[in-house]
Length: 294
Image 1 (spheres, helix red, strand yellow):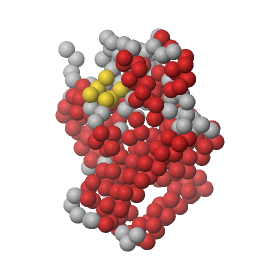
Image 2: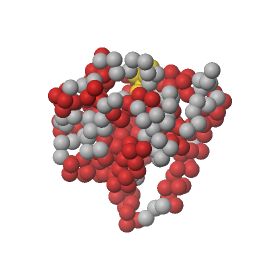
Image 3: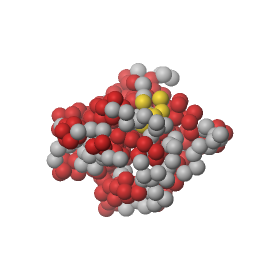
Image 4: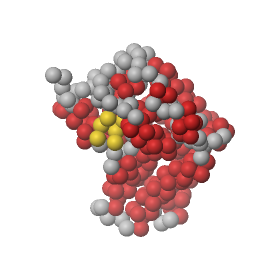
């Protein structure tokens, strides 16, 4: 089975066409949401706006990670060089991710998806699990245990000559917030990263490869899943069309802003018929992740 069994070569070429305007809009939206979240918390600090700001920042920390992912595939901008620069400096550096290192790791995931050699298999190998086990994992995330563990692991690998841009970003963020009259809001970045971001990442990982029919089958409809989301799930859990994961594994060169169109075409052509590879929101993802075999 190949994607051209369902899409013509002309349709596939149109889907793979990159648009710099749409790419820059995607980058701008992510940073505008981060800036807006800080502005909301500083301008109207209360028990509603501050938690909302934390949720938005955490979701866009994942959004920056997805931009790194898309640029690693050279799937966001038309020019390879622009993908490299934006993917590193506007997406990877703020979250302390090396585009080159991520690409090497992630392309191995694509090469080996559906095999025991998939480097991402450890994140989802044991699903479905019990509801108690899933609650325990999510509690570790929102209580900060996962975030602190990951931060400590990152700090042990810290090298100033390699990660000074990350330090510069944080110095600039703190200075900018202080100039806006809300130096204290800098803490929201870390609250988001340590207490919310890990749970969002976990839900994304489960939705992509944890609730699938057969992780050992090479067919993406068997080893990968797509999650159909509502607007608020796009805002808080699945930024930048990351939920269309079967489509991405079918053709990784399709830009994220065309994945929804690709999904509609494939679904209309019967691509998903007979396959249990669609989840309907992240409540459904969690239900499927705790569904015990008959």
